[in-house]
Image (cartoon, rainbow, N blue to C red):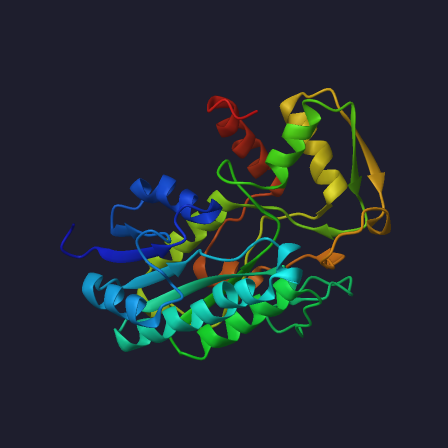
Length: 294
């Protein structure tokens, strides 16, 4: 490890975002990394978390761990609460006790989506699902420590893990047509772009680090239908995408019909160049193609 390097502890490192941070970590030579998942660190155990942070002494902790099964959260609110609400507070308190900073990743589901104006960090929250409610409580528990930055994101996908892009590709390979909702609008986020934004922020050190809420997604706006059409186009699959309304595809958890973020705060403060979602989708599918995943 370099003498002046910044040590970064990543939780949930086997998920989409954690895997992308690991994949691009060699591009950040001033940072050194400790990657953990449930096998190395139980983030719901306060003593284990405090001991681990005390022993490893990171400068920053990036919490990528979450209970992300949106519909299962409706019936298993206890598990979602433990991972999404309680654990962020545990990590943040351990960070505060051991003199390090934290970045916690949250979601567009803290909003009800009943608007047509991009959400800023000051927009009123009103989650309508158990998942959204547990994530909002996690934000509150983490930021109250005074050492945590919250980054909300939306429609996350990656070449790693399970996500909408992989689901569409899998079904489009074997089905002549797919029905996808067109009345839910937002912006996809390529997890590699979010990973890059997080490591850029950390690279700037404590001086620019703000214990505030930020919004990050790729640029542009689309519906799930538009997104599915582009996925099929990029992969040259012979599948028709048919549009349907949300009411025709009922799910246990209510989705925000509008999930567009205003990203000017994070863009301006950290000088980020945020790619358009189509460009990033192309990059992701290119990587997936090289790895035999399309």
